[in-house]
Picture 1: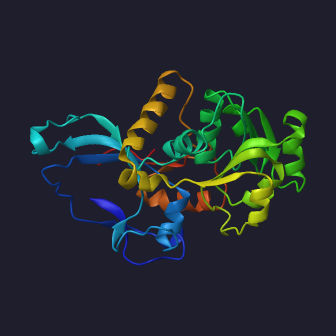
Picture 2: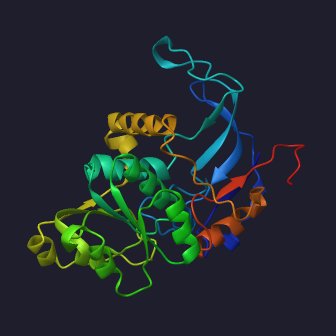
Picture 3: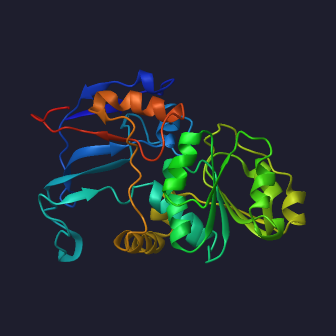
Length: 310
């Protein structure tokens, strides 16, 4: 087996290297899966540097999301259960699949989104951002999307955003308010960047601010009197911990997502401006993601032995 093993924390993606590793030997209750594609996330960049809020023990294999084909099924499951999937089935890492369930759980479970809500999605052309745009639209919200370039604004628009705003314009909070009824502000702010403080300027009475992440690098400090005076809620979402703390919610979230997919209200958000093929391209893919040169989900294709890398 080949992979990118993190034996010690690194400065950045450029320090990652592909190595040969022993083939995995699955336990009796585990599947063996051939990985055909792996997706990158911003937290991958933080984890390899030792900067994420949860760190696996060293050494570990970088990456959290995948899709592939089952090579071997469990030989023994508790209570005499039979494997749900068969050899040859195409699967993805549902418990580790990050962006879509993060956005669904944030908007539906945490913010209680409803039809007619005005929703502000920051970094709307990113992986979680495009998922949030689609979910909010499917549930009847009016979506205002921010991004940092015209190309990314166009991408957000193509995935359903009603209005788009360049957040590099210092007057963006005023523009957001202008787009809402009577200038009252938005009902929900979806923030994977670290823009809670300026977003308070354009949130409505009883509004909900969702803390998704800190892609800008800094963890904000909020003056709590502003929270009190506007009667607003600041709500966190840590999807990775739901499998431990709220297992039933995981199934509920995925049921909701599959319903949106089946009704064609949610589609894939794979970055298509450039192809990343082979594990050797992972450092470049993560570097492009970290430099904000991409949109949507940056996926690395993993050719199988004997397959072309073209």
